[in-house]
Length: 467
Ligand SMILES: Cc1cc2nc3c(=O)[nH]c(=O)nc-3n(C[C@H](O)[C@H](O)[C@H](O)COP(=O)(O)O)c2cc1C
Image 1 (cartoon, protein in one colour):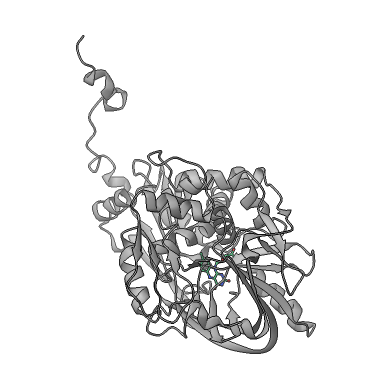
Image 2 (image 1 turned 135 degrees about the horizontal axis):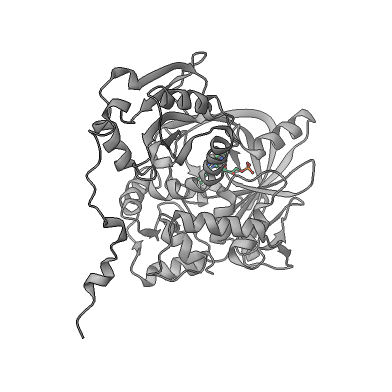
């Protein structure tokens, strides 16, 4: 297992981390360079950010393979999204609780009062319409007011002044519920932002868990040893001892501020968040500031995809249990394809009416976390000879098996979840229903060319050298 610095070291040894010593402006220039490097799936270390005290590192988790290395797989060993999903499920079954330690690298420097100065930290401004500089990598730690349990999520934070910022909690987050609880009671609420933490914790924080499960236990399970925690300076929260930096804040609910940022699905996402006051900053003596390039870019998308695993699993489970006749099913819910799901189901059809009836039933199904219709933009039904897990095969079916116009339907005025930013107030958005099966009358004529006996052939038997 690799910690934050261990992963950075591995990438550098492999020649996959670029050091940039030339001075860069944290407003736009740094983001533009980050974009080019992130798209090459490489990591970066800006050693000289104008006006800042710390270097900026990032691009460490911009492909699933890097998640695998952090979790103990060796370079060269295959590790894909299914492997990562399996590691998450195993860690959920075998969580390891964190342990509290008395001292910590992240306490090497402690700043309070007049020593707090957020502009010291090289926080980039990414896109032209962003509200300002955003911390994007921070794991926000808070307490569930009902259970007292520590909660962790990745939340973007907008820098507002030398000692003020706004930690953004979307309406889907647990943190939003904690905010509401504290605000209703007229109480301030502590949050700690941990920057540059163990990769296992960074991944667990991005994962959507039910409130009774702990991201810290999950992270321990993922890395096979507990996360070390240490007390905050100005609250009763516990924070990762090995982080690069901790920003402790009190959310005072004295006012809300709009924050606009280019989001993972390739759109701006205007949100509003309460203003928070920084009460302490602690960091390693040679701390690096970890920044994730926001927007529809590899690191944000790869980390963001972790949250989709459980939603995808819930959708597949719900549809399999509520509908009959599905031979195979896949749900594509990938940030790089936007914030909406695309469902493909294959069937062994008996009549031409069947596919549309199945699609109607699927849109009506309850989807686990969200109703299917809220987060699904398109449902496609294909014949059983089409590979539902291969979108190219599905497209092939759409362009070779549909001739009647009524096999495409547009369903208007469906309510969406908030991440479908193009949905209209009141009327919502459209949904697509596509029947890409062969018409019954074409079943024989449109047969796929198949080589008889091909399934039984083992290529290895034909490639053996004569002795
Ligand atoms: C880079 C990145 C930025 C994110 N920004 C936010 C954010 O600003 N607000 C939010 O609520 N969720 C954000 N998320 C998603 C949450 O981290 C994720 O849904 C998490 O499960 C929320 O935790 P919670 O429900 O325990 O509060 C972000 C995820 C990533 C990977």
